[in-house]
Length: 237
Image 1 (cartoon, rainbow, N blue to C red):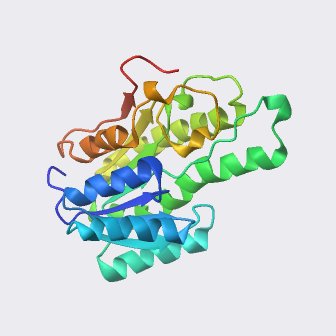
Image 2 (image 1 turned 90 degrees about the vertical axis):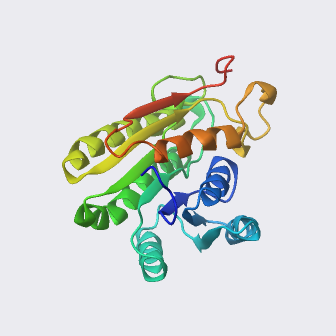
């Protein structure tokens, strides 16, 4: 997809952070962007900003852990624009505690959003992609999907699982002409850090990470980027 003009791109968790930056950037490249998250006001704000610069976008509230909401979103997009060309599974949550202090609820929340959500959203767009023998699924994994971090047991487990899911989905979809890419950004200055005592000046900005996502979308149709790792020039924190 070397031309993103009028390509239909769905970005989960795009009310803020990396997802918002990716939505803004892709809209500037001519894509029709589906902005979704659980918070309606945030995604409406993103759409207004996109439309103010001449871009095309729609805001659809969607909890990626709820299959019915996902199915409804896909049908609404098809009715308005057509089937989704690119899915960016970006929605994620981090609860950073030692494993001994992580609750069952903490664990289930991270697995539901970070892993189950990517499965459900991918599952919803695959029938149309298989039918037209084209499409691209980009899973925003994080470097925590292949590197352990202190007080990140549940988060790392969900992201390691997401990387494994991505690898298998790629194998299964290759024969259908569908690309599946794992995108692993390092430390990025987003709200996921909360009030953690970290030096945000050493992090990448959401806009810089969004550029990485867009570059994957622009890859040559005959080339498959299987896994892309993106880190701050000075290394992770």
